[in-house]
Amino acid sequence: MLMPVLSSLVDAHPQVPHDLALARAALDRGEMDQAARHLAGALPHAPTLPEIHELLSRLAADTDRALDLFPLEPHAPAGRVAAHAHLLAAAGRPEDALPLLAAASGHTPAVDWAGVPWVSDPVLGGRIDPDALARTLMRLCTAVGDPAPRAAATSLRPYLTVVRHTIDAHGEHAMLLGAGSALARRLGEARLAIDWATRGARSRPSKLGEIWLGYAFRSAGRIPEALAALRRAVMYDPDDLSVYADVAATLADLGRLEEALNWTERALERDPRFDCVVHTAHRLRFRADGDVAHLIALADFARDHPDDTHEHTDLDECCRDTAWLSGTPAGLSRLPPGRATVNAEPSGDAVARLLRVASDRWPHPPAAYDRALGLVLVEPWELLAMLGHPTVAGAEPRGAAEIWACLGLLHHGTEEPWLDSGRRRLLLGLLDGDVDRVTQAALFALVTYAWVDPAARADVAAVVAGRFTETAGGPHARAVAELALATPELDRPTRELAAATVRVPVVPRQRSRSYLLRWLKK
Image (cartoon, rainbow, N blue to C red; front, side, top):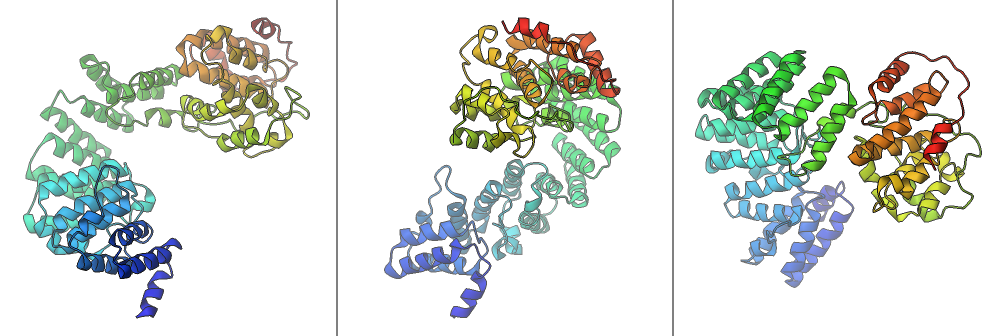
């Protein structure tokens, strides 16, 4: 009996054999609470391991309060929830157990919670109510995201089997077919998603059925059919503005940008603050003309409306792969030897904190500002001391440390009005001299602050415009131009010149001295 147990444990998480040994010993002593705690701890690491389920069965046989040993209070650990589900299934109530197991899958989608025999048993399909299963699937879809993480494709597939068995037992059920389609689409099963959504829309025509069908077609790259389905959804409910946003996004995918923008304008006339439409409209406007003002307006809207109906990724998508909007540019300037701003030595703790947050990528400037918040625990003089310090200057990714040190300065003295603040004065003090990584980092920190504080925008725009004017036509013009294009409220002539500079190679020439910036720093 010992060898099969050892053979099945050999690939388990290192903690699992220890937990099982403790659970077994606790059962032998009659300490049911201890046994339950160890089994719930082992389940997340090996949710399909036979030995765990054997011990759960023994626990259930030894006490009539086995379910009470795995209470389901709010925020209960996933292992405890799964254990409760398995005991319900063993007691002949798999239809009550499945929503609990799905909740565990929603918490950690990559864990194979559902890879157990009772989930794939056709008997479950006959017992479970199709409406209840549809609701369970919709909650699961919301939890795992769209698309689901790649690592979750296999572990979530048993839920598709449950849908098949339930349809076989109960016949065509529009809500279940639609919810099953939504999960299949998230798992990369585009053909199955289209099949189920088509059958659902045919079984019971509705707005939601057409939306599910439109999403299924879109996931398969069949954009014209997706657009047709979404247009039909609008006809069912002309007041659902979220569908207008879907239609607009689909038209944009077809390259029909002007029509797409017309749909967003129609929706905004009805409700100028409807979050899905606002996010889509700003994204498509930016796609149309490339003006960063649309993204700044979107960031302002997101900041002022933290209670949006759901999480949006439009700002992230628009900023992706754009210099300074989502990370450092490929041609980040070198850092001259001996470039240091102060002669104090930073502490080891300060260096460690800086390197923990330092990265050459971020979703968008406000996200970079938020990420730097932890650097409020590092004194400003230490942040300055790390600019050009050998410990951080050579750290990978190159140039990131300087950027985050400057972003960290933004979180000091935040109670001070911007124009009279120490953080502004320190950053302006880093701009003099030739353009290098410290100069660029300081400029980016100023630009980032302008994104998050509208009151600072006119000042920062003047600073960036002045610095760009000084470098125009010189060897560092492109480096400053990329920052200028990310700056809120920059005047149009400067923005147009910066755009032309980024597109056209510059002729090197000697840069003039920084008289304007010296005046600004006073």
